[in-house]
Image 1 (cartoon, rainbow, N blue to C red):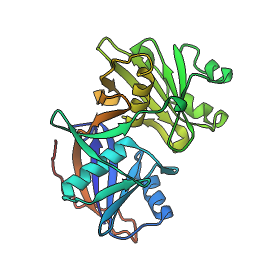
Image 2 (cartoon, one colour):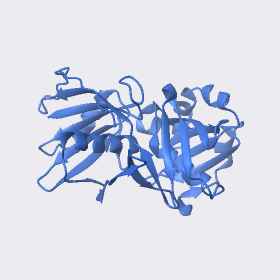
Image 3 (spheres, rainbow, N blue to C red):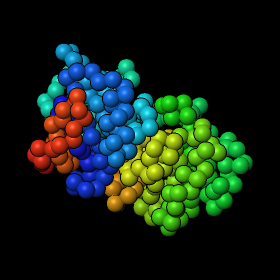
Image 4 (tube, rainbow, N blue to C red):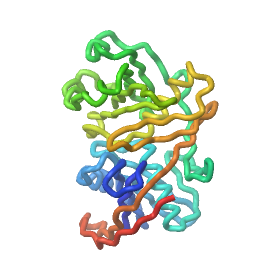
Amino acid sequence: MKSYRIAVFSNAPNTGNQCLVYLANKVLTASEMQSIAASSGLSEVAFIHLQRSRATLRIFSPFCEMLSCLHAALAACYVMQLEGLTVDLYLGGKVLALQHVNDEFAIKVPLLSDEAISQSVNIDIRIQFPDAVSLWSVTTASHKLRLMIEYAYEKQISAIDASLFMDIKSLYPEIESFFTYASTTGSNTYVGRMFAPQLGIDEDPVNGNSCIALASILKKTKTDLTKLKVRQSQQCVVESTVGEDSAFVKATCYVTEITYNDVNSFAFESTKEKIEYEI
């Protein structure tokens, strides 16, 4: 079984959000995929099951299967392109369609509906974040919640201690993840950090789904919003072109390593074959 290690939202090997993408000619069981994801040390691992006329994508965090993960989906689409695979790639029964925006590789993602966005947050949750400007809850693909926490200043985002979210995760099992953000001096430019202790992710280096959630929230008050930049760890930026009901997210990726694994033993010995490939 062949796998790629992809740095997503990055053009360098040791930055961005690292994702393993496995190309499997046999269907792996959920427990096999979960075992690989749990031992990977990464926030998500993607598995592409190749069939004659289509390919199916499944994504796992260290704790569970993910019904949606933008950076893993981008990594999988990127690997499909590198492999020259032209069959449709399905995630959750829907085809992942690649696009090009201003000659750049991108993927189209729907914005969240008004029904999926709410400022109705319990008072006890608000107490946990006394310095926040606003709190929004958005519904995730797994029908849990992502808490969007807005702060006034960029320095407040960098000062956040990730252990806070680990400490309160048992109090709010319905909250799958937390995304903290603040505007910067740049036009429609924000800084953000994402924490998902319920998924086994202390901090996600760069998170795309949270940027889609942020674009959906901003669209409610900024009807002329067409561009959005969200800077996260290691100065990596998620750039989106925002439409009326969807956004195109750029996919800057870097292949750091290609590995050939024995699926029966889950060995992770590598051929150390490294290539550079950037769109």
